[in-house]
Every structure is written in structure tokens, then in C-alpha cells.
Amino acid sequence: AQKITQTQPGMFVQEKEAVTLDCTYDTSDPSYGLFWYKQPSSGEMIFLIYQGSYDQQNATEGRYSLNFQKARKSANLVISASQLGDSAMYFCAMREGGFTGTASKLTFGTGTRLQVTL
Amino acid sequence: KAGVTQTPRYLIKTRGQQVTLSCSPISGHRSVSWYQQTPGQGLQFLFEYFSETQRNKGNFPGRFSGRQFSNSRSEMNVSTLELGDSALYLCASSLEGRLNTEAFFGQGTRLTVV
Image (tube, rainbow over all chains, first blue to last red; front, side, top):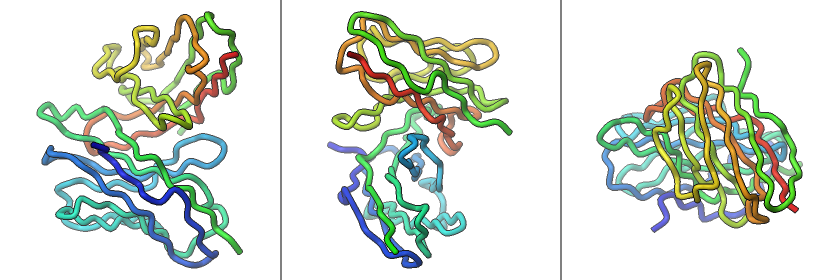
């Protein structure tokens, strides 16, 4: 089974509008972390936001917020007030804690290509 | 604060050759992970080094190896290159590689095998 599922291969949004990128995950580990990364055409993966499995509140970082619904195992990224520079691939990723807590491996989804239009 | 530096940015190699990629993590970070990104397989975890020891390994053949030096810089080696090894190789740096610590990525090395 896929650990991270991103069902939207591509999305379009108009400048200044909000957009939600979907992410669902699958794990039986009670300790896990969820990440969103942005990858522009240059290739670098840029960290956007993090949500821990025990965090009570949804994470926010500037224009980015994470809509964390633990029971549904979803961690959607919301970008408010889209800008042309937001056009990129967006990846959802998960780290599972395991017993030792040395959760080094990130498991990525297949990504969503976001295109911001005028 | 300098980010993660990967060298070289681009490489073209011939089948059967071997290649070494380098990653300098953010100062103070002790965990370095490597990922392979291809259009077909997406982003896949290769291995992670922490304090010069391989701590975690993905499902890749033994042709893929790595090491980490005492200054946390890491190298990844691929021997006997195959066409399918053409990919973007990304290095990620973390303070400790723990559950809630961010992983900062470099710009990657784009390897083309011909």
C-alpha cells in the first residue's frame, strides 16, 4: 500500500486565490511527522511546513497551513493568496518514528504540480 | 548560514563507469540522507549517515554506497553505472534526523548515464 498518496497530479489556481493540495497517508506507527516540500524547476526541495502526529493544532507558516485530520489520515496543504512564484511541484512526505525515534527516512508522495495563473 | 551544497550539479557518465557525488550539510548538522528522484519511481530513499555511521538504508543494490566524514560531509558512490541510474540525486541535511526535525535539501546532482 502507498504510504503517501497525492491524488492531484496537477492543479491550476489564479493569483491571489487560495488552493488546497491533498495528501493522505498510511501508517500504523503512533509517532510520525508529516512534511510538505516545494520543488521548483531548479530541483531543490524547499521545506514548507511540518505537522507532528501528537500536535493538537494545525501547523501554519506564513501563507502555508496544514489541515491535519488525524482520524482521516489526511494532511492537506493550504496556500493562501497564491503568487506566481508558487508555481512548482509540491511533495507531501512522512517520517515514521519507530521505537528508537531515529526516524531519518522520509517517504514521499508522487507530487502535485501547481500552476499559478494571472 | 550556508545551505546544503551538492557537487557537481551536473554529470554525464558512460555505462559501466563509476561516479562519486558530494554533499556538504549545514554546519552543525550530523545527519545526511540521500535520495534518488526519477520520473518513473519518484523520490526514493537511498541511505542515511549519522556521525560517520550508516544508520538507515533503502532498497537499492550494493552498487550504491556512501560514507560520511568526521566533518559530516558525505559522499555517495555508484559503481558500474546503468542507464537506469540517470536521475536527480538529492542530499538532505538534518540536525539529528529525528522525527520532528526538518530536513534541508541541496539543489541536487543531475546524473545522466549514456
